[in-house]
Image (cartoon, one colour):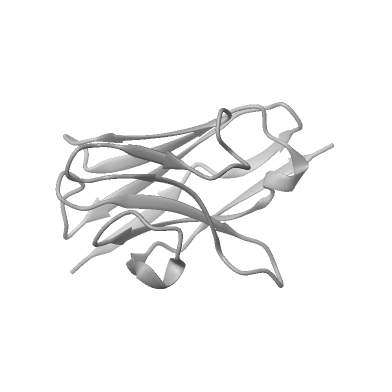
Length: 122
């Protein structure tokens, strides 16, 4: 069965960095896209970054482009989200998910991890 497990969240000050991990089992990240989304209370889940399984193309939403970087390690079947220059507005629970192709619609994703909390203080 498919399982995604996020880790690496924590509390940092504005301008700090974190690296999130998403360990996948039951599917190969060489064949399936994986994306990072985030969600805060009372708001819809929003896309952050996605990496294509077939060619490794990466995509970012405007709010994080230039600060975040998504990558994957095929040997570990794990995806990462490197987050630099963090801002308080980045505070959220971060989730990884898989879909048929990269999309900014959370409804497109078949599987989600449990999420990891990221808190950025002023």
